[in-house]
Image 1 (cartoon, rainbow, N blue to C red):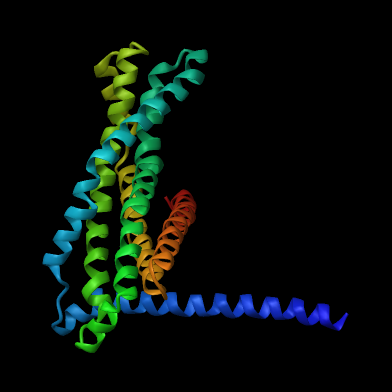
Image 2 (image 1 turned 60 degrees about the horizontal axis):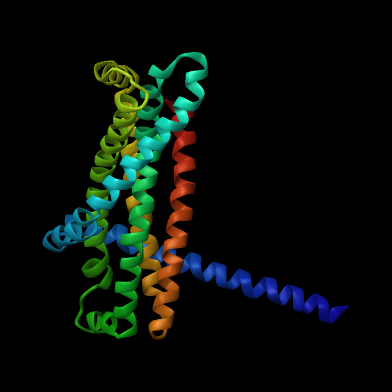
Length: 268
C-alpha cells in the first residue's frame, strides 16, 4: 500500500514540479519581452524597427493570399448556413446582418489568428529553436546581446501590427464572400445587402475584433518564443517544440477569445 502511495505522490510531485518550472520559464520570457519592448525604449535602447519591418513582410504580407481565400470561403459558408434557416421565415435579407457581425466580432479575428499560429507561431519556434540547438543564442549572450531584444521583440512588433491589419482585411473578404453568394445565389439586391450590412455593423463590432487580434498577436509570439527557447537537443527536439507551439497557440487563442467575448458581452 505504501509503495502505491509513494508512486502516486511521486508522480504528482514530478508533474507539479514540471508545471511550476514551465510557469517560471514562461513568466521570465514574458517579463523580458515586456522590459525590452516597453521599458527599454524609454531608457534609450530602441526597438529594432528595421528587423520588425522585415518580420512584418515575412509574417504579414506573405499571409495575405491564404487569409483572403479562407476568409472569402468562410463568408460564403456562413451565408449558406444563415440562408438555410432564414429562408424558412422569409428573412433572407438578414443574412447580411449575421455575416457582417459574425465575421467582424468573431470569425475574422480568430481565423486570422489560427492562420498566424500555423504559419508564424511555428516559424518563430523553429527559428529560435534552431538557433538554440546551434548555440547561436549562447553566442549572442556571450557578445552581450540580449536574445529576447534581438530575436523576439521584432517578431512581437510585427504581429501586433500585422495581425490587426490582416483582421480588417479578413473582415472585408468574409463580408465580400457573403455578398457574392447573396447576390448570385440568394438573389438579394446588391444595394439592399450593402445597406443592411452598414445598418447592422457598429464601430464597437470592429473594435472588438481588433482588440482580440492585438491580444492574439502577443499570445502567438510569447508561445513561439517560449517553445523555441526550451529546445535542448537537435532537430527532433526542434520539430517537437514547433508542434507544441502550434497546438498551444491555437488553444490559448481560443481561451483568450472566450475571455474577451465574455468581457465585451458583460461590459459593452
